[in-house]
Length: 494
Image 1 (cartoon, rainbow, N blue to C red):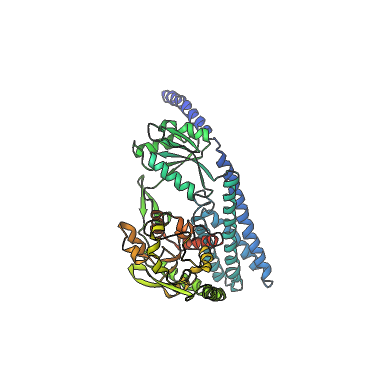
Image 2 (image 1 turned 45 degrees about the horizontal axis):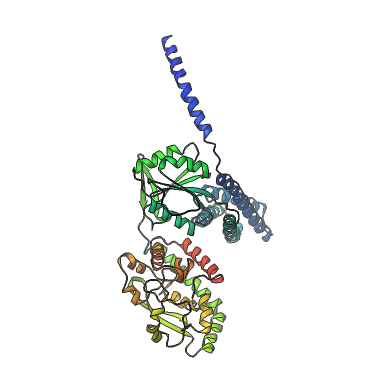
C-alpha cells in the first residue's frame, strides 16, 4: 500500500511539470509572416513539380504510340518514384530554394538516381522496348523541372522587390563588424531568400549608422526584437563575447517562438559542397574537403569545355564572320587581337579577342594613366579614346570575347574560371592571390556576372578565389546561364 501511495504522490508531483511542458509546447505556435507565406509557396512548388512530371510522362507516352500497357505502367511507376526522390532529396527545403546552385543540383541528382533505378528495372524485366523512357522522358523532364524552378526563382525575386515577400525574415546577432559584413552580403546576393528585419548587437551601444531595420544593443533584447519584427530566423554572425555556450542558450530562449538559428561559418571562402557535418558522441564535427584542383571532376569539366565550345564555334561561325568583317571595315588593322595572358600554374598563353581598340592602343596607354578609373593595377576608362566605334558596342555585349572559344577548345582556358590576368598583374600578386592560377582561367566567371569592371579589385580577387576553392559542374552551368543574362542586359562592361 505504501508503494501505491508513493507512486501516487510522485505522479501528483509530475502533473504540474507535465502541464508546464504542455503549455510550453502549445506556446510554440507563434506564426511569423514569412513562415506562413513560405508554406504556401512550398505547396505551389510541389504542385508544379508533380504537374511537370505528369505532363512530360503523358506527352512521352503519347509520342510513342507503340507503347504497350506494361510500358504505361512502367512510366507511371517511374513518375511516382521520380516525385518521391525529389522529396527525399529535399529539393524543396528552405536551405536549398531561392538562392544558389544547390537547388538545381539536388533536382539533377534526384533525376539521375531515378533514371538509374528505372534503367535497372527495364533490364531486369527484359522490357527493352520501354527504353524510350530513359532516352526521352527523363532528359526532357529534367529540362522542364529546371526551367520550372528557374521561373519560380524569378517570381520570388519579383515578389521580393514588388511586395516585400521573402522566404525568411531574419534578425542578425553578433558584434558590429560581423553584423555589418553579413547584412551587406545578404543585401547584395541573397535574392529573395533572406530579408534582414532586425539586428541585435553583442555590444553595449548601437553603432551610430542608420539602417532600414530595427536595431538594439544587448542580447537580452533578442526575444523582443524577434517578436516585434515577426522574424522566423536568427543569424548568428560570428563569435559572441560570452563564447559558444551563449549560442546554445540563444537556441533555448528561441524555442517558444520556433525561431530557427543560422550560424555563419568563419570559413568565409568555403562553400556547402565542401562541408559535411558528422556528429560523434554529441560532438558536431565539421569536415571540410580539400579544394578540387585535379581528378575526375576536371575530366568532366574539360569534356564539357570541348563539347560546348566546339558546338558554339560551329553555330556561331556566321556571327564570327560578320563581326570580323565589321571590325576590319570600322578601323584600320586586323580583325583579331592577341595578347599573352597567364594561365594555370603560371603558364603563359596567347589569348584571342576581336580587336576593339585602335592598332597603337598599347603605345597610347602610358599617356592615359592619369585618367585611370580602374581598381588596383587594372586600367579602365569608361570613355577610353582608344576604343573604336564597333569595339564600344562589342564590349558592351561581350562580343569581343567570343574568339576565346578557340582558347577553350585548345585547352588554354575553360568556359568558366578566374579572370585571365596579364603578366604585369601576376607580378604584383601578394599572399593568397596567386591561388587564382591553380586552375585554368575562364571566358566567364563570377566576376563576369557580378559587375565586371565596376567591381573593386579586392572583391574581384575574392570572387576568383571563392570559385577556385569551390567550383562544381553545376555551379559552372549556373554561371554560364547568368552570363547569357548579363550579355543581354550588360552591366559594368566598357
